[in-house]
Image 1: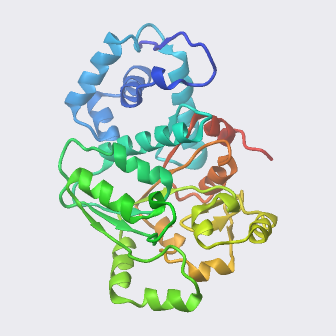
Image 2: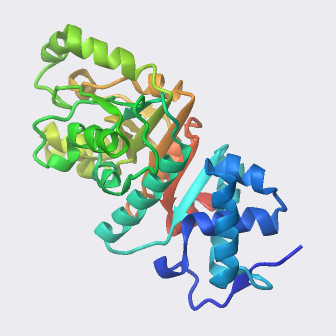
Length: 328
């Protein structure tokens, strides 16, 4: 069996040294001895694409006598994450200290995975975040998916930051593949529990949420500590509210639902004002793709994984290292 590799200059993986799909295909073919057909099925590409990528791996020097050390570190860490957290796939990107640069890496990786995985006729439940919004900029399937539906699982209109409006996530993904979008035309957080009840009883809103509950796959993002959670910024929580949530052990958020480092849900009166699917409904989806990373999100990602419903995780290499050796 061939060994695969090249020299490296640092312990972290640089963006320029990493070609996502080519590296993964070469790894499974040369390191694990998978057939081209097996690889094609795993990564949702044609066998012809597998052959082309294997040829490129040789031509560009990825496959020599040993696997390039840095991609090897990444592949081994991805496999360990899958084993420890029951994931179908972990996708790690190089770490970038600058927040916007890391967001772009995560968005590109998530878009590339969805391009390969998505098939026509599926319903995709969409949450909101700046990363998911940017993901739409890079989502460009090579084929039309006219029967795909991207349905919003959480409200988002009138957000101060347009990138947090779920409308701007769903339509971008739908437009890129020729599919359609179903919009939940409500704020993410309303002013009172009564307003929430009225909106949830609206026929159009109820219909959208009913469709969202039948999604084949959920597309979510992870938020970190309370003061940095966009949905809670929309709710105009005070600094005292944030301190209270921190004292309750909150480390992360998905779709407005809070949890601690062990993945246990933490209730809060704000839930009575959130327009979204229940997180338990999302946990029942056949597949759930979650995106999140960065130095302030390590515990948030850890708490999310400990809930054991995530099938595909997209995060960064540095966060991955923390996840396999979490703080006690």
